Length: 117
Length: 107
Image (cartoon, rainbow over all chains, first blue to last red; front, side, top):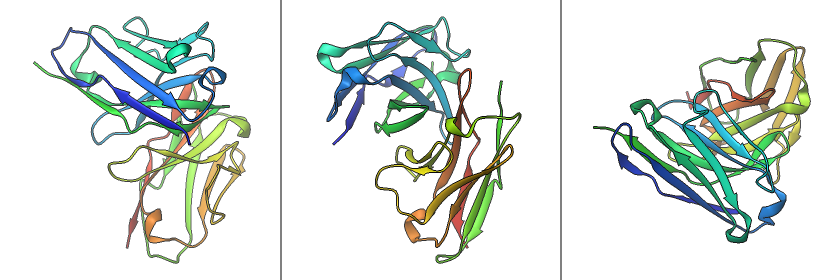
């Protein structure tokens, strides 16, 4: 079955960078667009970014455009999210999500990023 | 930008009762792009409904989705103990937007 396993979260100071990874299994990775969605503690869901099935197209929410970069390596069935210039407001659980048409059909368990001095 | 407003914020019901959750879009939208998710405490969200009314794989038929103009409705016909959670609607327009969520709690 579909498995998405995120890693790379942790505690980081404001202004620093972090790279999240998500290893996928159980499906043909190169057939699907992949997303990152985050959730601040006790808050709702916020879509961050998407990368197309072949990595040729990427789109971002306005809140992270220019600071975060999504990419993928189909040979490693892995999607990445590079987080730069981190702010305390970026503190959240970051979910790796498979794109299913216009919805998000499978979610990883998430990795927690805490931005704090 | 489309804004999704979910109501009520909190819904208190008993097992076996029927739940009706609403998601209102700020402008006319296509039902093809509307999804519903369930999130239990400490867990990742799970897709319930896509295209406003199609159940995702493995979702029991007590869950159903419908639309009425700019309002989208998630109905749970007979609440089971495992259904008490937070529900989100989501829309794909220029971007991907979530509603703020409805917490379904045991009365």
